[in-house]
Image (cartoon, rainbow, N blue to C red; front, side, top):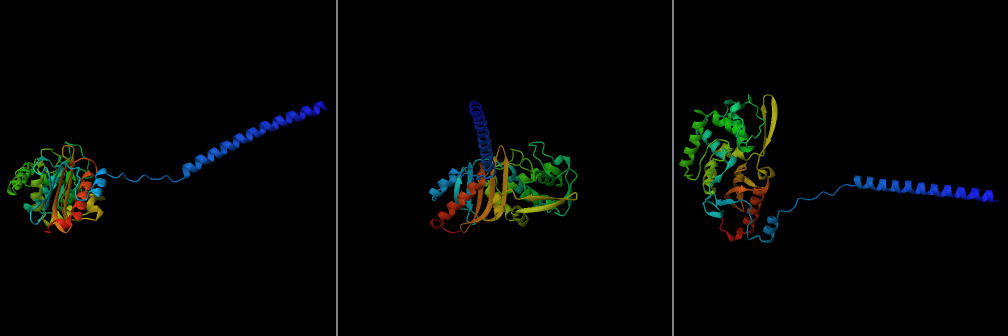
Length: 313
């Protein structure tokens, strides 16, 4: 009897231990499944954080809130100033320079179909910017102008100046002579790309440049294309406009150019139809990747909100 009772106790202990083991395995399985489901469940994507200035603009539509340090908006027809902030400050203008580059080429009447070879001289040794146009690439002058204006291609812009009769020095002299002719007394140009911080201007001068550049059909067309593909050395290279507002298609833009180097910040000039008016918009020295686009959109919202309070052009 005692032996039987002892056997039963041993068996009960074994069963008890087995139950513990089973319970532990069950808990592990549940834990593993929980982790698996958590990993498999789609993660909620965080939406873009709203710019505080956008919220302020929405709450106070009668005002305009800007990140750019120098701003000028003028009526293209009357020349009346619509908005101004440090309109006379002279600052580096980066690739806004390329509009002047295109004007000098077009003023000379150079053949846009003529082939130009990209050379080692066109490489950027100042800022170290990259390009997909390799030395030895051959392109039509018109294609170089398109890439310079639309995609802000530095080697393309430099090649335009280098291939000018007389070379770069003559080209830069022509850039400065054209500035004087337009009454751009605050402006100086040192190279055809805008990579040099010695290329400087003021918002007021840049309005004059936009108005003059708008008279050239090629500049209007090339600067407002949203994208283009060129064939270079047997391979196709796709480019897009550096102005997201052009690519977005919600603005009526007749001329556009962006610019950026560290000394200049982010810059943008446009001639655009806003709230029933043709306006020239100049935004200089803006910091933050999307700051100039944000400023342009806030200016547009402000103009649309206050359109009834302003005389139509």
